[in-house]
Image (cartoon, rainbow, N blue to C red; front, side, top):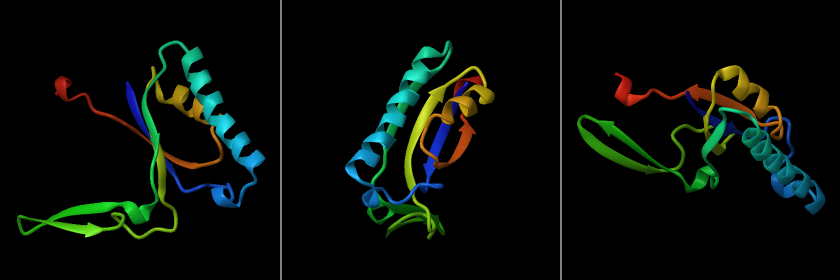
Length: 119
């Protein structure tokens, strides 16, 4: 099954730009450790994952009365921004949750995808 993992805000982490270069390197090492942990687990594969630019760079599209409206900025005003994502193939949710414990202390949302060909 595929799971979309959204890295939301920084959880218990201080802002990235307030960290020393050594602290930033230690944070990046956790992402490398996560990649390695996923690669070492049978049936688990990171299909995609990227950090995202800040919310001020977002563009939101909404359909109202049949017309597409384009606005600058994120979908909703929030204190926490969406920092990145992973699309992970995994045998089950418990495995995903266990592996995500390797990452820095982000708040995360995990959502299973739906196979459009199985409908």
